Length: 415
Image (cartoon, rainbow, N blue to C red; front, side, top):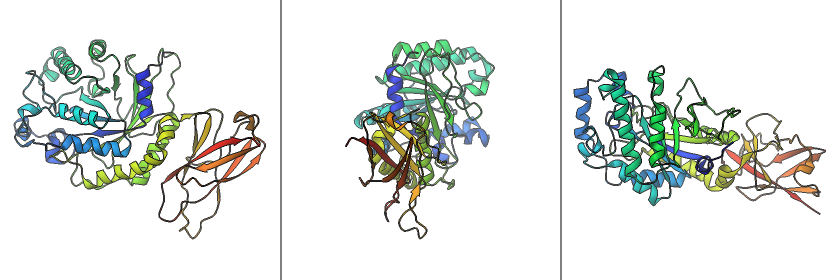
């Protein structure tokens, strides 16, 4: 099986930021507002006269992503409404340079990503509500689509990936994927190509040129690569509330703890977690969105190394139930522990939560004991050893410090 380096690099990012930004941000009722509310083209298109993001919009987003521990940002270069944030170079006038801002916003985004050492990824719609040939002459539309992608691939230097969405809209038609993906490889041979399979086909393998499967709003499961000639990564994309594009009255936010748990759980299968934010019309982030990414950053700051580079292991298996799991890195084992109490809990008690179903000698044949350390505090953790089972007694979080998921390192000691 071929394992491409850029795919493994993508897999090691662990966390990415998804950004849905466009004309729909002005309305503030989600990215599907034009379709759902049946807004006529002549009304919706006038939003271009008001679309004028601030000069530092991209810098703010990239800085927020960096502080959260994101390795990449996937921005909607063109969403289903057909409006492009990039200079389409005469292909259409329905783009950011012909809007009120008069600027190539993708260039600004790429520059900001490089400033903060983050890989820029481009979301690009496959379906199109604005381009008439999508409905009247599908072959002509595919030419328009490929020319659009050629601009994306040839105008901004090396990029990290292209994230397609919308093939499910015409699932029985020939999208001429061979032509589309070979065009991308011509300009960007080492770019991640991802094609979202949507809510109904999470984790489905697609065209051989694709480099990752997707799990939209669904916790990843191991993918079956039997018979696949190459290694394929996986990624879950998730929203903080209900909308991808900003919904000004959508306050149904998930808790930061739930999002952190979901993000961490993705690593059981080495899946990346792509967490979305919908900027305001000026490109700035809502206070709550910035705050959630800031809290996530507090977790990745402490545990990011093993989160990014730890791999699932067959040598250790948690059998005590719950969400806890084990990753291996550099020959050491790391326990990811969910649902720990704090000392402020009046019912707090020492918790026995993880067992290893394997021979102890796998860690180190000469080991007579083990050192267990909580990575966030450096405090030792007690344990019992019974044959091939290690039972760890995890100390609670101290008052004022609850990181939602704790990571404990197990190292063999030789007396």
